[in-house]
Image (cartoon, rainbow, N blue to C red; front, side):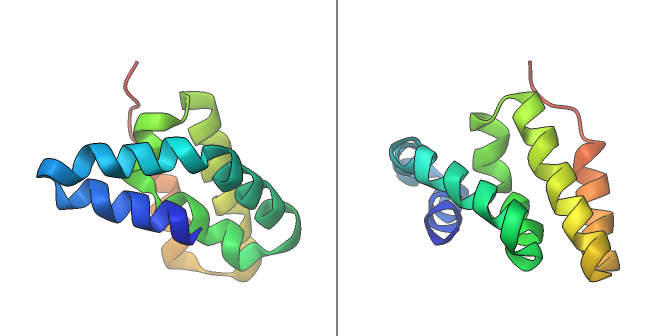
Length: 100
């Protein structure tokens, strides 16, 4: 999740950092996805945090169906942990339109 956060942070800096942020995600996508899959099965805290750790990069790099699955996993984890603020964030992100 740290790599995902770093890729997202680079992207958010803008300018010359956008492409390196996306490239970092692209290089590490397999590991990032594996981490999220593991977290979904074993660690609700991480499963809750993953969708927000890379919200902007993930919006560009995941298919809409993958993005929905990540957000639903985060929502389930937030509900399990009784994190109402996180639940609201995940629900709000689920309601946001995705680019075609």
